[in-house]
Every structure is written in structure tokens, then in C-alpha cells.
Length: 442
Image (cartoon, rainbow, N blue to C red; front, side):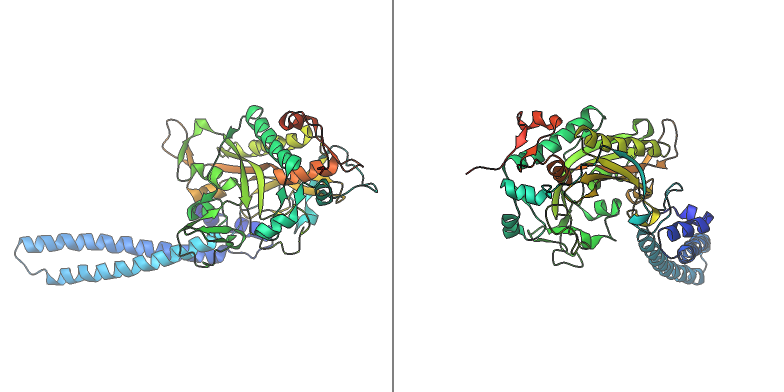
């Protein structure tokens, strides 16, 4: 959500931010709605003052035994006019709120201009990408040959964009999540959380999944039905949204709260299943488990004071990068241009891991600073000791990292000519000392 005070004082800056996003200007429309709403509020206040004044006159007239019918009629008329204005003010406020909630966050001043991913800027690389050879395979070829990645059974159970892992690969997926949680909690000071995986409307609104990205979500009805929209386009049934990322419940921990400024930053992490309808992903990454309706991810969320978020953003990105460094996976870090950023973010770093099977870098983590955009939607504030005034907190989120994509990266980067997969050294304690994943025999 946007700051109306900023919009009133800096309409040109607001419009320029939208232009950088590739969107049309909107300040004139928004300020017109705001003026209509404020005009109705002012008129109500004036009428209420007049009603109070006339009510006193009525009391004085009646106290003297006089006829108060005329001022009483005026009070009744004022009451009707106030009711009409209340409806108008509510209508303008609803339109303004709906319009504001449909507009993305403003890009940071240091975010590069650009239209799409081709304009993103690479910042740094780590590790040496392994060149493909005649025996280099993609993860799904490796997994199926090992007999431990089953797409056919998953499709029978759930349809397209689902995967069933078995045996050592299933254990490796679990090991990756355990390793990431241990790293973030013991070395980087995050508090582990096990949050609900179903949340209410206002929680999805708080982190900007609703209303704009409704079609990308799964909705579970209380009666047990489940689907992208659960056959309930108006969402009149009681139910919950399945979380598309742990960012949603973790960030909303401070929903409608005033946090003590001295306790910030708050850092929390969680490993959860994530559910996404992938409504706009038709034809993209249909082979393998790169883009799924259900996947697992370790999420990092920070709640900071307004003056802390930029430094926290750099720190969070380094935490995610450390996962890949310890796994000895080649990666690069890029800063997204204004036209390629997510809806609710002010600045984003993407970390892309090298996949030799695809001969390409692919996103494995996205670390974003949302500033106060989500906080305004959640009414999440902080207050320093001894002060009355509050400030909106800043919120940040990042993948630390996507477990399924990390599994893919390990399989492709550690694949051997005989079809086996070497287990990275840091994961072996989580795998019972196992050093290699090999074909299931029998």
C-alpha cells in the first residue's frame, strides 16, 4: 500500500515510479478520489458541528417552553444529509483503497531501469560453472535413471506439475532442508518457526498476494474442496488460502502490531511446503520438477526499523549465498531492473545457480526489500522507548533457499558418468555418512 501523504506532496515522483514499472501514470486519478473523499469528510464535520449547535438551540427553546419544531426539522434534515455523505465517503474510500492496492511498490532509486529480465544487472559470481559433456544429463533424466524420481505416479495421484521422490533422493531433499535451517539458525541468528500452511484473506492481503494475484493461489474450502479458485470465484464459502510461500505467515506475525523498536530486527525462518497454481506458467518448464504446484522452501523473513532495511537486505542475500557456497554450487547474483521486479518489492536480488544439464543459470533464491509497502497493508508499526509516535516497519523476505531447485542443482552439478550422484560433503552428516546416491537395485 502506498503513502497518501507522499502521493499528495510528490505526485510527479509517484508517476515516474509507475513509469519505471512500465505502467501508466495514476496520481491524477488517485488524488481526485482522495479529494472527493476528503471533501465528503469535511462536509460531514461541518454538518455535525451544525447539528450540535442546533441541538443546543432546541434544548434552550424547550427549556423556555417554546416551539422547537423548526430546528428539530433542521436536525432531521442534517441527519439525512450526513447519512448520504457517509455513504459517499465510504464509496470514495473503497475505490481509492482498491485502486491503491492494485498498484505495485515504487522501485528504489538504486534499482536499474529496464523492461524485463534482459535488463537485469549481474553483480557477482561465485564458483566455476561446470561445462556440459556428452554424458551430462538434466535432473529428471538422472532421477528417473536412479529409479528415485517418479513423475508417472505423481501424475496419477495429482496431475501435472507434481513429483514423487523415493529412497535416497527423498532423504537428500530432507537433508537439504535440515542443513539450511541449521545454518540459518545457528550461524545467522534466525529463529525457526513452524507456521500454519493455511491462512485467512487478510493475511494474504497483508503480503500483497491478494487481490491482484488471486488466480495464482490455491483455496481450500472448509468442506474439503480444494482448487485454484475452489470453484468459488466470489469466495463466498468459508475457507483458507494455502500459502504460496512461508513469507506470508512469517511476515504477518507482526500484522496489526506495534513492535518495540529496540527489538528490531526480528529474523525468522521456516521450512514449509509451498502451493502455487502457476496460472501464468503454461508451457514453461514442463519437464522435471523445476516449476511445481507443490514444492518445499526454506524462507527467511526480517522485520526491521526504517533505517535498518537496506543493510538487512545485503545481509539476507549473503545468508542465502552462503548456502550455495557451502554446497560448492556455482552461482551468480543479479539485481532486478524496475520492470522485472515483483509487485510488492522495492528492490530485489536474485541468486541464480548453474545447472549444467540446462547449460544455464536458473533462479534459486530471490531476496527482496519491501520497505513499508507490506507494513501499511498489515498496519505493522514500531515505536521507540519513551516515544508516542509510531513508524511503519520495513519487511524483507528471501529464499534461503528453494529446496527442490537446490536438489536439482546438486544432482546436475554432482552427477557422475556412471549415473550416480556424489553427495556434497556438508550434507553427508545428514545422510548418515552416505557419500553417493546410486541406482536402486532390484
